[in-house]
Amino acid sequence: MNWLIKNFLRGLIIVVPIALTLYLIYEAFMRIDRLLNLPTPGAGFAITIVAIIAIGALASNFFVRKFLNLTETLFTRAPLVRLIYASIKDLLEAFVGDKKRFDQPVTVMITEGVRTLGFITQDDLEFLSLPGQVAVYLPFSYSMAGTLLLVHRDRVERVAVDSASIMALVVSGGVSRAVSTKAIDN
Image (tube, rainbow, N blue to C red; front, side, top):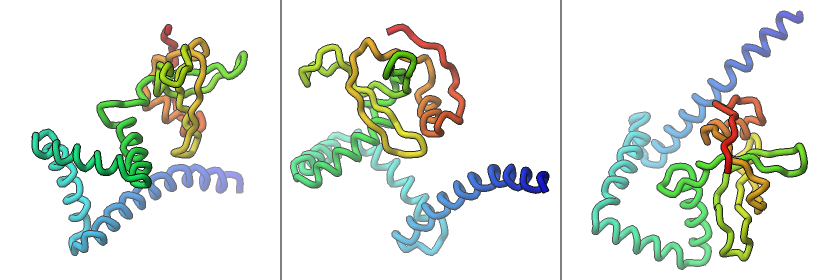
């Protein structure tokens, strides 16, 4: 009986992540296809990817850039739209834009002997009248949420680890392994 339970749990650990990943990809394809009302499965997803690439390429054009700047100006002036638009744009730019914010992994000393992992998002808070302070984003485990700490620069130590590895380590609750854990001097 012990052998049966052990192998069932081992199989569960293998099958559930694969099945869930495939299901989420399938759902993404199907939802986009339903939204675009296309009869060929996957065509909507392919069209969406091609459209995003085309928009990205066109964004370097002078006239398109002017149009995008006008659109952004409109979106940033409308009260409720500004909140939604700015939050989504900042989040996307933090991961994939020119202004990546999660590229400085650090440890933060909470108390003597207790540290947490995070990412410096602002290394100068003088504009908030907080000289010597830095903003550190701490992602939560098993969640897309996190919290922002404002801490003195002396309590922060940069870490020589790939940002994606740190994010995976934190989000997995410490189960994933980081590439390297060698600290860098400030």
